[in-house]
Length: 147
Image 1: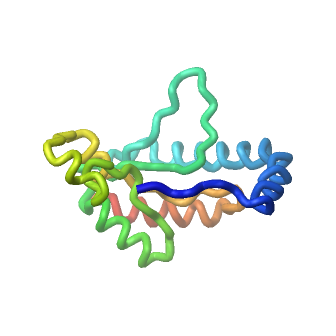
Image 2 (image 1 turned 90 degrees about the horizontal axis):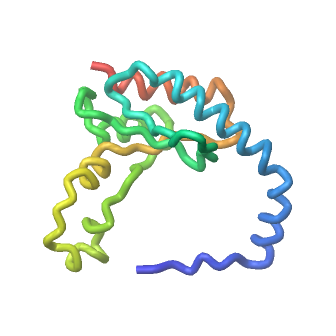
């Protein structure tokens, strides 16, 4: 049920060295996230994350929701994106449906959590991502979610 996330000395040293790069990394992630937000703003088949007012998001990942308006389910979109060479993964995972907890939460009925689990998709976002690579992700996601 759990993992050991303790860092080794080498991992810790690498992390400390990376801290000097953090402002540039966050700036790049925010720029790429903004490009996604603009690209998908008017697309009813793609639900976008919303940043609360007066916050500055670090965009560790970029999760969208493949809405009911999409001609393809989230799982179908995932499979098609992977065929196109775009690495995507599920977003939200409802813990009460996971094998380790299923028996403990057998009576749980969480329709919004379950819907988010069915719809959520994490698309690529990393500081070294080029605009051409991001444009390809946008193109492929639009191709697989447009009616």
